[in-house]
Amino acid sequence: MNLSVDIRVEVREFGVDARFDATPGLTVLVGPSGSGKSLTLAAVAGTIRPTRGVIRHGDRVFADVGRHIHLRSQERGIGMVFQHAALLDHLSPLENVMLAVRGGKRGARRDTASALLERVGAARRADARTRTLSGGERQRVALARAMAGSPKILLLDEPFSSLDAPTRDQMRTLVRELVDERGVIALLVTHDAGDVAVLGDRVVNYEPGRTV
Amino acid sequence: MSDWFPLWLSLRVSLFSTMTAAVLGVTLAYGLAKWQSRWSGIVEAAATLPIVLPPTVLGYYLLTLLGSRSPLGEAAESVFGRPIVFTETGAVVAATISALPFVVRAARAAISNVDSRVEESARVMGLPEWRVALRVTLPLASRGVGAGVALGFARALGDFGATVMVAGNIPGQTQTLPIAVYDAVQAGDEATARTGSLLLGAIAVAVLLLITQVFARRPS
View 1 (tube, each protein chain N blue to C red):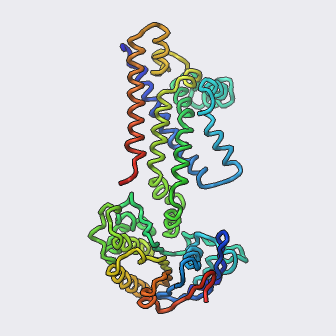
View 2 (cartoon, rainbow over the protein chains, first blue to last red):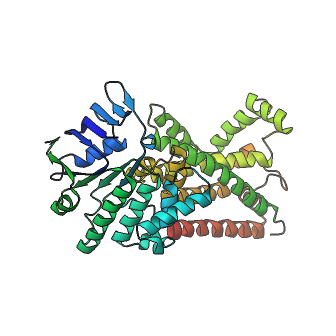
View 3 (cartoon, each protein chain N blue to C red):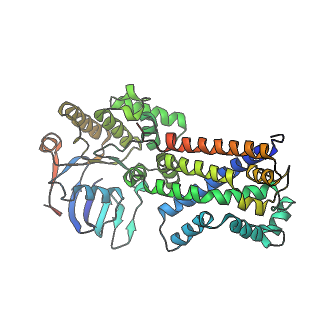
């Protein structure tokens, strides 16, 4: 199942026209800061509404401006990781991941979350105070949380940009493995040529205001 | 002070009214912070009114609204079997309304200040709105909400005007500590007035310390 994006998004004076298809595996959205990559992700996630066009995942329509369709974020089956992991500091890493596991009893959700933390190499810190996690640990937990709802689509908004080089390499490997393992469609926003070189199986290039 | 009833009554009334004001106030504040409509301004002004109105005037309106001859008062009397006014319940109502604006204003500001990206990421994870509110927004706003509730408690504990209008001044039944202090002064009972004032002052300072040391401190 493909993700097909053909939209215009406008926020205040800035607008972006984005048009691409993504298949299971990694698709890297690359371009200078302010070219509208993150806005595209937000539209796919459903946190902002496009002003024109259609977003479709297989035969499910996420958004169709002409037909006034806008599926709520909750119904899109998406996992997301941000540049600065939006972890909840009042919950432990394990609880952060549990929060995103859908359905099931508490015990089952705990098991799922623990297994995911194990998978991303953060099991040791499962019950730590979230505030004390290092940047790399936070991104590992954020990645586990993004996968916790068994999403079909994984959105990664510059997830490596605040990490040091060795940690970034480890995270790139981890993301690639997880994406392949789970067969998800992953969109990775970056302006780092290193990400493109390592992860850019398919690349969508942005210039200010549009995809090329 | 020979009779401790006013202290216990005051603590009971302010505890109940603070809990009620906290639930009502946080719900109202959440609605005000999340849904902007042309009614928002009116609702917020109405929720702020108890701060602005002279307490006796607030009490007078409540008395008119809840008195035995009003439709609301009649309905309450037929349900609970006794009137609201001139009872402990009346004191709770008066204190709740007095405390409400402090909770609403602080909670509204705190909820509005929560980073909307964090809430959005919770929605993207699939959390329904009510879980976003309970697991994300309110915990992140808890310091501001806590400060508002603490201020509301202090206000409820100290209320004189509204309480005396709605619940009256019946020793052993509705006479709260601030009213007992007033009574003691009128009767020339210096010792009771002094003890009551010291107790109320101490509780007020404790609440203030709680707000400045616990709720207002930045997370480390």
